Length: 114
Image (cartoon, rainbow, N blue to C red; front, side):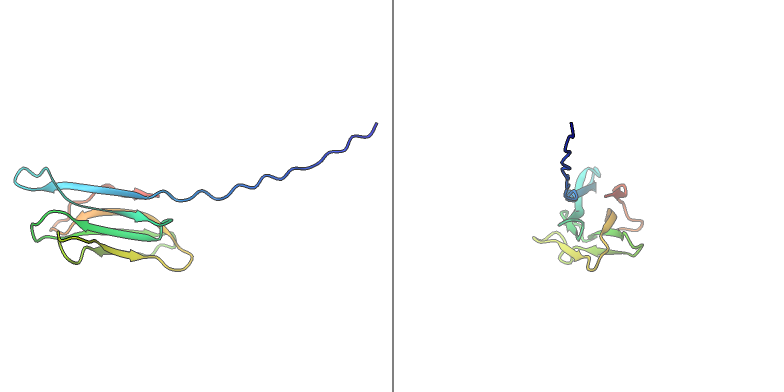
């Protein structure tokens, strides 16, 4: 008796990258107010920075790409509505990021690996 075997292929789509954000709480007289937040969205292509505390210091998010390139984006209008954003182009995606106050020295979240 001859048995026939039919192969069934299984195709798995690549997992979509999850959005990620971190806040920094180090503002106000008790250093317990949220200074701002930053993160990565849109399949690790968009980096954003949002200043949420009106102290004139600002907020930025530093990023590192899969190809080793790095940079930062700041919130251009302080604590007013809206955030700063930067978009990766080409084949590289954001590999990690860190949200920081624009103080000397900066107060930052932990570096988040995506």
